[in-house]
Length: 323
Image 1 (cartoon, rainbow, N blue to C red):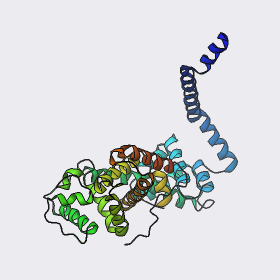
Image 2 (cartoon, rainbow, N blue to C red; image 1 turned 120 degrees about the vertical axis):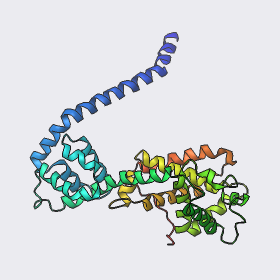
Image 3 (cartoon, helix red, strand yellow; image 1 turned 90 degrees about the vertical axis):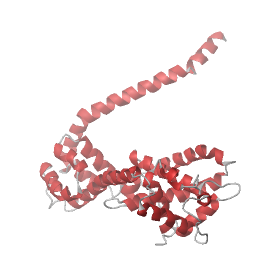
Image 4 (tube, one colour; image 1 turned 30 degrees about the horizontal axis):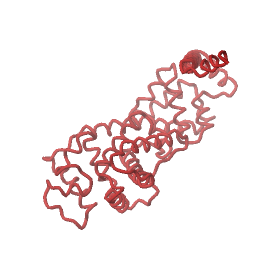
């Protein structure tokens, strides 16, 4: 009995599982190093020999347009020993066609035998480099501070009120009425500190382009039992969208939904998806109070991250766009 107890404790020892996990990670790392530094080169060489096509051609031929193709092209370029191929990951749109010609020359590709390759690779490069350019634009908008002296900023804020509360006149610029659409204080500018003008631009885009949906979400946010601060939660969802993009988690979504270069409007549309879906999620979960917001926010975040790991993911609002 004593020996059986010792054996049982050994089998269930947490240190044993941790050591096993560490060993598996080390073996995985060693395999990855071996594959990327040696085996991958010879495998590519062999496949080129028997198919007559380079890796980029094979990817474009076997994968349909979307995240699967573009992600594999991105990995192939990033892993290449060729400076010409790696440089394709940091191109401006004006330089794209010249660099495509350089790639075709570098890989000795005969365009007559593969007439669709150049078009397909161009689309992938537009998506890859466009994602990085879009993030730079998003980052710039996030860093732009809301300025009460800036007439454009002020007009955007007032327009947000008019779209969400068309039948209620704003008594003054600084007023407790802002709490009716979910701001914390008498002056909303203090709530934009974390996400800057990106937060306001997202809120306004949702209200301008999906006005009925935005008003419906606001009515849910003002529910006596399941309510939440509409604007504050909206800015929090802006931070979620921003973080997902910064971590490259939005690449599959954009690669599947935007056939070329993604633009700022595509980021705003993803925010609209989050705002609309979080409202449904919150109502379905029925939290006991707003004090549980962080827990349900993380649960929703995990749900979205899980969806973004699916190869065919497209996270778009299901209501008809009104404008």
